[in-house]
Amino acid sequence: MKVGLFFGSFNPVHIGHMALANYFVAFTDIDELWFVVSPHNPLKRKSSLLDDYARLEMVRLAIADDLRFRASDIEFQMPQPSFTINTLAYLGEKYPMHEFVLIMGSDGLNSFNKWKNAEEIINNYTRYVYPRYPDTEETIKKHKNTLTVNAPRIEISSTMIRNAIKEGKNVRHFLPQNVFSFIDKEMYFKQIK
Image (tube, rainbow, N blue to C red):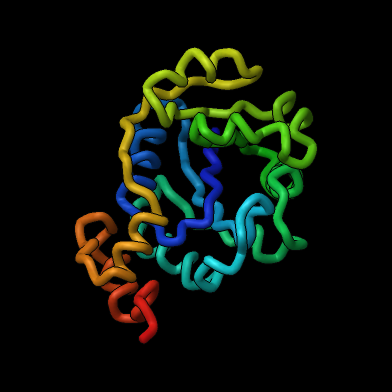
């Protein structure tokens, strides 16, 4: 089985993430997509993240009973900060029957050489890359072991959603309904007064 690994903070998971995930399993040769909730991306500040388990719960709510998707907390048990190469090695040992591929936006290619053991990842794992900007398809093709996936561009970000919630704006339709209800109930991302 070919499994796409969609790494992210998912702080929060939103309809853009879900549309991409759906596209990858419906329009490529990926059989399942696993949302790998990262406790701490070494290239991002940790202070802006919600609790790990709150973000995992939001992903679980978002995927609900869709059997094509899985919410993974694999990196929660690994040393912090988490490095993709370590996660890939662990998953390869635990699930030798699966072929794992990475799902990433083209903007991630610019900093890929900063990833721990980047060459090992490039040589051993295919990266399914979706263009984030109109002119990036040719850029993607210049990178070794990448497959361009022309998924729809959805200009929504978790940062935009967090900021909108802080400003008291209604973001109901930017999030899966049960994720919106969870955030609203827990009062996540609201401005503390």
